Image (cartoon, rainbow, N blue to C red; front, side):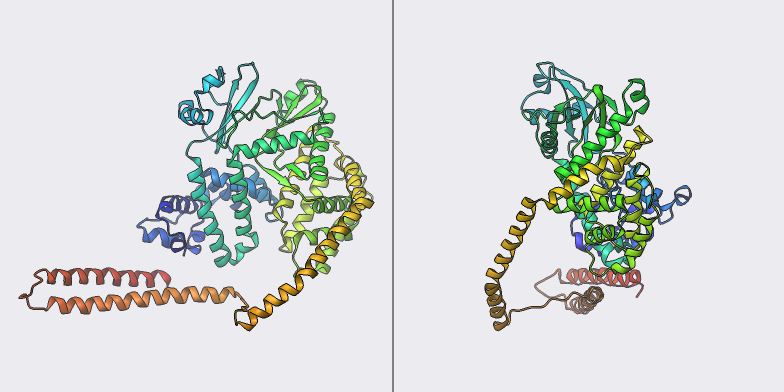
Length: 558
C-alpha cells in the first residue's frame, strides 16, 4: 500500500491534497485502486467521492488538465512533459496538456529580497542601480524582474521562488511511488509507462530548478550559433548567476505569439519562418543539442529579421547515431520509402516482441498516400504525428530523447506555418538531411565506426576468459543465482504478507485479553498495588488491536 511504502509522515498533508483534488475531478476510483484511500482513512481523513456535476461533464483530457493545474507547480511541469509524449497520448490529450500555462501570481519583491541578498552577497540595489520591483512575468518555479547594471546594460533577473524545492521534492517522492503502484496494480494504465515518464520528469525538473545549468545550456547554444548573426541568445552574467538566480541580457523584441505586431513592424514573415526552421534543424541534425520547447513564448523577433531564443531550462540531446536515424526517417518520408521509415521506427521503439510484419504494411499504406505530392505541400509535422499514432496503436513508445525531438519538430513546423502559410518544411530540411547522410558515409566516419567496433570486440574477447572464470567460480561455490520475477506471484506474496500481519496482530490481541484477565484476578495483597491498572491497559490495547483487525478485513472486502 502507498502509506506503508512512503513511511514518512511529512508527506501526509501533501498526499491528502493530491487525493482530494483527484477525487474532486472524478478520479476517486483511481485513488482507491492505487491505495491512497486506505492511507488517508487510516490517518483519519474523511473523503467524499462524488465529483461536482459541472466537472463530471468535462471530457477526461480536460479533467486531467484541470486537476494538474490545481495540484500545483510540480504537476503543471509534469503536464508539460506529458505534452511532449506524442507517442503515448492521442492528439486530444496532447492538445489539453499543451494548454497548461506555467503561470502563477507574482510574489511581492520584499519576499524575494532576503534570498536575493544572500545570493548576491549584498543588497540588490548595490549591484543593480535601477531595479524594477514589479515582476515582468511569474511562473510556478520563478519570477522575472528587469534591472540595469552600473554600465547601463539592461538585464533580467530570474529568481527562484523561496521554499519551492522542498515542495517539489515531496511531490517527486509521491509521484515515484504512485508510478510504481500504478504499474503494478493498474494494468490498463501500464501502457503509459508511468515509471519512465516520472523518471524523465524528475530529471528534467531537478535540472530546471538549477538556474546555473540553464545558463550553461544557453552558452552552449550561443557557441553553436557563433557564426549565425541572425540568431540571438541572451548573454549570461556569471558574476551574479547561481543555482537560484539567473542574470542575463534583456531581449527587447516582438514576442513570437504576437503576429499582429510582427506585421505592423514590417518584418518579412517568410524570412523569419525560414531562419527559425534552419536554426532548429541545425540544433537537431547537426549539433544534437536543442531547445526542447521552442514555442512562441520562448521566441522573439528582432529588427533585421533576427530571432532570439530564451528559456533553456528544457534541453534535448541526440547522439550522432540518433541524428543519423532522424535523417534517414525524414529522407524516407520525403522519398516515400516506407521500408526505411518502418525500420527506423521499429529500431526507435526497441521492442523485440513487436511483429515488424504487422506494422510495416500500415506504414507503407500511410507513406504511399503521399506519393506524387509536391515537397512544398508535405506537412512533415503532421506526417510524424500520424506515424507516431500508428506506433501508439501497437503499444509502442519512443525513448524520452526522441519524444522531445518529435515535439520540438512538430512545434517548429507549426510556428513556421503561422508565419508563412506556404512554409516548406521539407525543402528547408533537405540540405541538412543530405549533409548528415553524406557525413555518415564519409571515409573518416566509416573508419571511426569500424575502429570503435574493433575496439569493443577486442575488449569483449579479452574479458571473456575472466568473465567465464568468475561465472564458474560462482557456480562452484553455490553462489550462482537466477532471478525470475513473476508479477502475479509478487502481488500474491504481498497479500499473503498482509494476511499474516493481521493474523499476528489477532494472536497478540488474544494474548493481551487472556493476560489482562489473569492480571485483573490477582489478589490485591501484592507488592505492585497498580497491577489491576496494567490489566485495564491491556484490555484497552486489545480492543484497539481487535478493532484494527476488523476494520482491515472489512475494508479489504475479504
